Image 1 (cartoon, rainbow, N blue to C red):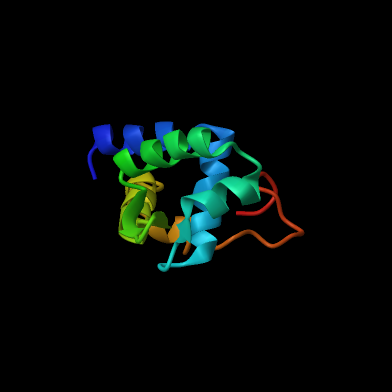
Image 2: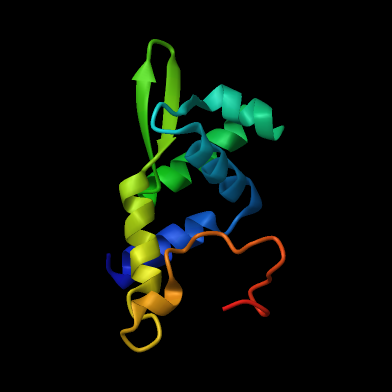
Length: 115
């Protein structure tokens, strides 16, 4: 991934509705969800949701396909992994083990108190 692609992906995620939709689609798995269900679950008008989903798709974070009259969206896990790798590839002067496996911190930790 290059800088321009990373900036595009991060800019697409830098909106509350888009971030919520992306996270929902990551949880939904590769089968994705119809755009109408995403809009309903997030209480976002369908036309506005369509705009947000298109923004995420242009950034490479989502893929879409038609199923009859519905348009389904799913997270692009490969692109998500590329973005995470890009963000951590220079971790601690070439010591990526310090970044660990990017697993969530335990509930008893915060970013400031746990390594």
